[in-house]
Image (cartoon, rainbow, N blue to C red; front, side, top):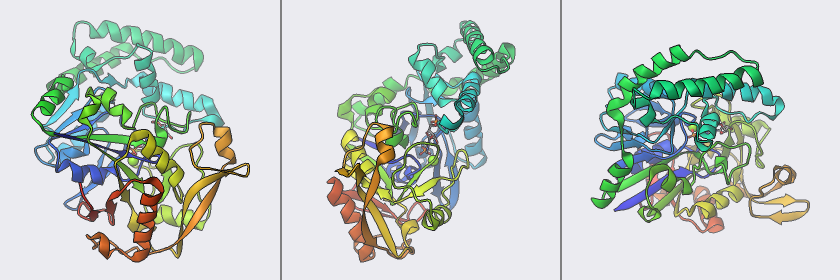
Length: 425
Ligand code: IMO
Ligand code: MG
């Protein structure tokens, strides 16, 4: 049996989808363990581009079981839309399994997300507006609604009524917003119950059976390490644990199940939303990377902030998540520049720091310490062997390995499924 975790080692959008897609071909089951439809995973398979938000990218590999586990927050209307989107493209969802323990994102969560961001004004988080934070807040506050609640036709109306009454009080009295209509929401969710019943099951027992049968499991993370609620740039984070620690709690498996941890690293750095970003570029190079890399959000369409590779955060991700191998994406996008730079430490009040600080005030003072590298050609898409990469690109990859002590096991050289160099795994 093996259990492979693949997750982002930066601020999300590292290009996880394509590596997950590849690793899924080796797995029997693909599991999403945290986050919700704030994720946007783009996978190009057989020349067709798919944009996924909640459904594991493994759905594109025929015959794989795909699990949306208990740690994920599910917006039923968004999930239904995604299932329809796949069906229109001839992709079957017969193998999709949804945890009965997963919490639901309710209409009031989306409403509260928007109202709260508006109230925060200049201090807004820059969320995706999908109700993720308010839903996890209810989960931890023990006032959430789960998929198993949805399916219980007798008790659900009463539970929903109580939730809506409570939330309407907050929406109207705290934010001055309009109350939500219980009857309309009940009707909508009755339809959801009917639609989702065939998908919902005890995914904990299911994964246990896979484990006992010696099958390979792939755990697909959304967002990234620096958006982790504990280790990210708090409060400019998401409300879940994208890191390896999130796998056990979010899927209901023991740590022994995990054999490999793949951290996906973009060859440069991007971030959407607010919050510190030490290597951010505000110049023409940053704009050029954004345009060349089509660095606009899959979920919200927002332009992504772009900057040089920051090894302080990547090393932090490796250490806090036990990363055993990196998958480096977008080497082609970074190509074509004369010189490229990698941040190896932060200068904070004249002291060089190599660990990621907790305090935003400290981070605000951090100036990146850069090492300069020669650039390489951007036309790498036909390369399949590491030896065939331009020397400058190899030097760059080997520097990442030296600085972090973690091998680079996969290298993306183009957008297509096959445009990748595999070195083990
Ligand atoms: P994938 O899986 C990049 C960011 C938002 C915001 C913060 C909180 O595509 O890599 P939330 O809606 O989660 O409460 O927003 O987290 N964020 C992402 N950034 N990629 C993502 O997912 C993200 N999901 C959330 O921009 O800064
Ligand atoms: Mg994305």
